[in-house]
Structures are given as structure tokens and as C-alpha cells.
Image (cartoon, rainbow, N blue to C red; front, side, top):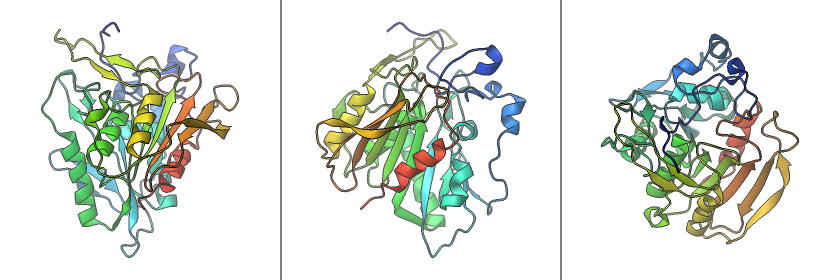
Length: 328
């Protein structure tokens, strides 16, 4: 794979509508750098602002944790943590996924932390060797995010059987990494356009984790069929290149780890996740008969790129998977 002059973006840095592009990628705003959001996109952010006052966690990388209305310490709440793509931020990623908007209705505690700035001024997560620590910065994001979960649980009543991670691109890679390394903390993950380690021996979860991989089969940044990621840093230095498996192989790896059937079977009906694409464009397939607490599922968005233009109920679809896969 030829090296890209610009390192992989977890979310594209452009306004497709403004550029006149027709694509399955976001037609409102493709979250990337802050420069990728226009005034209309900021105005469209209707995230609740009158939630019970949230607390700040994360040490030298502070992040606000949003507590839902109606929180009651006598009834432990689920925890959902959203991880942004390379070059994005937690706030921008939430504009795309919209999870904070449904937190009150479903009673989950929510956080969308930021990664670390690299030498090009872009935020990243140190996930797998494929994505996206291009500058080889010595940061331990497994420890940071695991500590964030631990600290939130110490301050609020969190249901240990319902701790979930959701990520896009670099954040998807990071979600897989966490499921590999911290399976005792995590019930389920949802990854959009991420992947697990290409070397399956590097993923050694101590217990089953439920995994949903969502991927556009026309993704030109993180290829549906797998590949490698590389680029040139702004200072001319060569960035590391790492292999990543296909979407199907990512799910197959988790099927093996979760003791599921080897076959990836289609499940009817198809879903209409991306209204800009014709019909019910998303196929649903899963490995059956997993161990308790495990799941390995693949949603293939046919014709979609790296930033699909999802329907308004996308956050509800993501939450539906998470909610139905607590730890046993």
C-alpha cells in the first residue's frame, strides 16, 4: 500500500456538502479537525446542556463525565465511553454519533475523552501497531482509559456488568485494544471502521467480551478487506506502518476468543442505517453460540465510506446492541 502524505484520519476533515461531493460519507459534517465543522453544524448540536452537573476525571487529560437526569445511586447506571477518530476530539465525535443526546432517556453515564496531541497537532489513541501513534509517543492509553473507568466507578454507582466502549476508526482500534487487555472491565464494544490486532496472539482477553464491528465496504481509509496504514509526518519523518485485518477477520478473531461458532451467518432483516444509500443497505451477520458474555457481530454498510451518513436513530441502534450485551 502506498504511503499517504497525510496520516489516516479517523474522521475526514471536510464538509462534503460545501465541497459539492456526493458520497455515503456524512453529508452534514464529517467530524475531523474543528476546522471541519461549519456554523450550521455547531448550531445543530442539540446535546442536552441542563444535565445534572457532571464531574471531571482523567488527571492531566481531564474529561467531563455526563450524569443522566434521574440518576439514582441506589440503582447503578451503565457507563458508555466514546472514543474519537484520529484528528477528531471527543466533542466532535459525539456530534457525529449523538450518544450524549440519548443518555438521559436510557439512563447511562457518558464520557467522550480526548487522546494525546501528536507532533502534527492531531489527537490520537495509542491503540494497535496499525493505528494511530504515528510519532511513537510513549503514552499508555489502556492505563488512561482503564483508570477513567475505575475513577468514575469510585465516584458514582456504575453497574460493573454494563461498562461499554464505542469508537470510530482510531477510536475503534482503541476499543478493540481495550477489549483485549481489559476484558474484566468491559462488557461490550462497538467499533465503526476499526480493527483488532493483525497478530491475533496479541489479543488475550481474560473473559468473553461482546463485539459489534460496523464497516463500510467502500471505506478508502480503513479498508473493509484489511490492509496497512502509513504516512509522512509534517516534519518529513516516516510514520510507522502496521497491518490490520479485514472486518470479517476482526469479527472471526473475537468469535474464536468468545468460543462462538466458526461460521459467520447472515441474519435477516437487513438494516437501513444510511438513508443516502438505496434500500436497506446494511447486512447483519454474526457468529452464533458464543460463551456467556460473548458476541461477535458484523454490520456491513454496502457502498459506504469511512464516515457513513447515518440515520438519526444510529445512536439508538448502537445503544440497542450494548444494552442487550451486559456481562452475565
